[in-house]
Length: 218
View 1 (tube, one colour):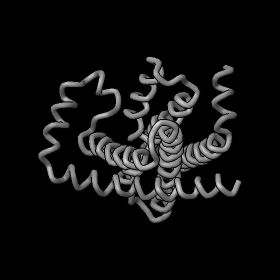
View 2 (cartoon, helix red, strand yellow):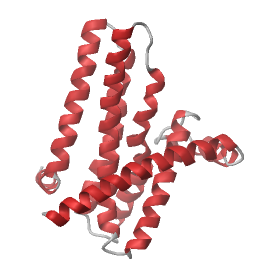
View 3 (cartoon, one colour):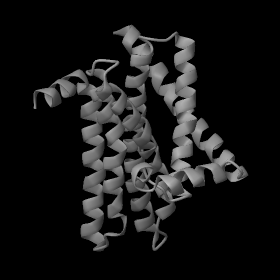
View 4 (cartoon, one colour):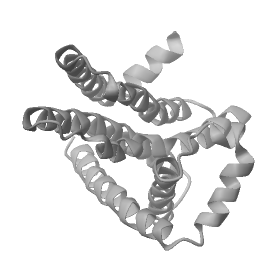
């Protein structure tokens, strides 16, 4: 409990934003279920939970002593779960076209979940960059972040297009790595990874600049 409270107070502002976005997203989902009596998009709540995991892991990494087994275990887990934060944006493929009102409501709903997921992912990467800057030169840190953005995009590709998830690295590693090798021969893989990775990088870069300016002003 003490550790959870420590993580909370070290990241109070980010947590309050994440909690608010999560509550708004879930409230809209419950409202949709009540009005339509349809649970079709209820899976978004699970996707949002997975999308928040990288932030919880990076918050834990911040208070873990580097060099220990726990530190590396947390970092690898963070890296594997990071694409889940950005995956929520691809859930727009489930947008319904039954009627105009529901279409608009579902657009708002999916936007809220996507923003919440992206905010969790970007906040998590900002935390990791803060740790990297303690060890590496700023140029090296930027290179690592760029690589992370595109690897995250590739992870989203594996999830959305190839239908794998983070757990498959343990439960289905042979098929996963076989698919990764085969996907390197597909132009669509590179196209998706480039465009989606560039989008993540742009959002992250803007967020980093805003965060850096705010820190400087403070």
